[in-house]
Amino acid sequence: MNKFTISMLFVGAIALCGVAMSPLTATADDDEGGGKCFRTKFETKLGADSCAKGGQGEAKKAFKAWTAEAKKTDATLSCKSCHTKMGPEFPLTADGLEKYKKLGGK
View 1 (cartoon, rainbow, N blue to C red):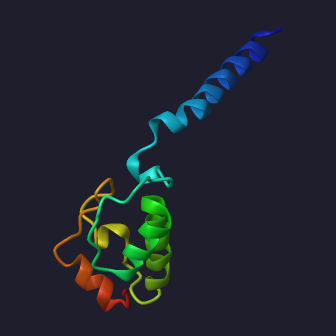
View 2: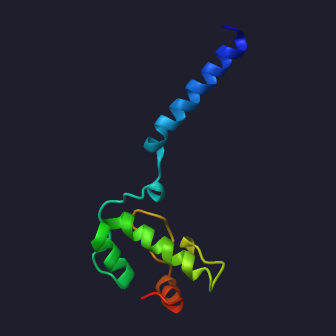
View 3: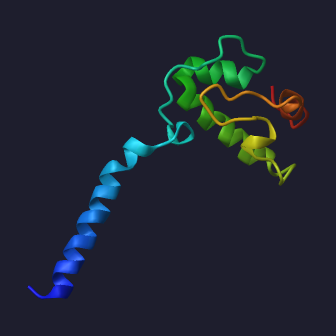
């Protein structure tokens, strides 16, 4: 083997380790599986229904889909428009619920 081949094998091995380790370094925001919802009292039907259906992962999917649809009305909308932190409790901004309802959320 020449030096180039050995170098490529080394680079490939490092890349493979990075891929294998990536689930271990995922953040709470990356975790679509989620587990059970942190909240027990819901002020939105979407939150209550999606948490009952599949926990926090389902709620995140539902709210991401809602946000994508609501962006048709407000292109600046993002998760941070209504939440102060992404996970694990997803606390709302002072006007987060109001924004949600104003954009048609129930």
